[in-house]
Image (cartoon, rainbow, N blue to C red):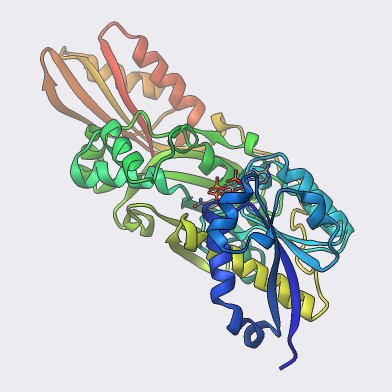
Length: 430
Ligand SMILES: NC(=O)c1ccc[n+]([C@@H]2O[C@H](COP(=O)([O-])OP(=O)(O)OC[C@H]3O[C@@H](n4cnc5c(N)ncnc54)[C@H](OP(=O)(O)O)[C@@H]3O)[C@@H](O)[C@H]2O)c1
């Protein structure tokens, strides 16, 4: 078989960069059979040259000079694994303008600059691929852009942050409180020293922006995605969820019936019969609903050295295949619509409310009246435990507008007999 050698450069040799270096080396003998080409890593860009030289055992490949890579015509593919916005955005833009193809795992950059970078790639007939930017190892970008392209998709929802899924799993399975589960996640290396981006849902929101843009062929940016994290979820909420036959997951939701796009991240009660309820620990999953495919779920490792490198290397193989067959730039930007983002007040969901009220006659009627007055239809209202002189009331609503529901809860919270609104959580389903 003919074997073409394709020069590649890796920018960044951290967790994913090192994993990609290992996977490309492990595939060296196979590539020619799979692709008709072999990838040769020509340069690795880092800040700390000595550390990278030691990690790879190849000091001759390591540089901290981007121009060396940009000006080397034998480098046809640039693999960006540094993370962050700058200098990644500049380097990717310059690489594409120089006719080099780009593979990246950079969700921050793709969520904010996807449209611009895809346009630059198109202008220069280049590939720009980013499978690893959403849900790590799990193939979801390519399936959405290609395998499921013949669908009208209505929903792409998922567990797209492993750290929060690990925390919620520990809370559910071992009865831990949030702070205890977060401490364990940090100790085991699942949570970063500053866990804000994970626990506040910001990391998941970046992935929702990317998924929604591709699923609905219309640009959704990070700022369009409303975000709610899991810091307010308690072991008590999880216990109540269990009683109702549900678990609590941090869900990234992108929904569209064709006229507008709902895009948000929020903790949600998921019925135990739903496939996402079985996704535990640091696993990720993306659940897709379409007119032809019906329902499909993609499950796997959402992060980690080799799992993420698997997705990066898969993209590199795809670019190599395109180079061998002279068909780069085949799959470019798929956002050809301009759908509005549905304001959160208009998004319809079912809700779970837990509220502590004084244990007095008429309090249940007060809650029912406030909901009725704000067009919120109640499916169930249960009086749970008595705590001192208070009663704990749990309410499950039908599907209602978020704006109406929030106004009703605000009014209930202001009533003299209300001690505390303990929890407000969305419930998935009709
Ligand atoms: N980790 C995961 O499991 C995972 C999963 C999915 C996606 N991702 C994405 O993959 C990317 C890489 O993540 P990571 O976890 O591998 O990061 P990381 O471990 O922090 O590694 C970053 C690497 O980039 C290098 N670097 C950073 N800024 C640089 C600059 N200005 N010039 C040259 N080199 C620079 C660093 O070099 P020095 O060490 O010399 O400073 C380091 O080698 C990010 O976009 C991340 O969001 C990661």
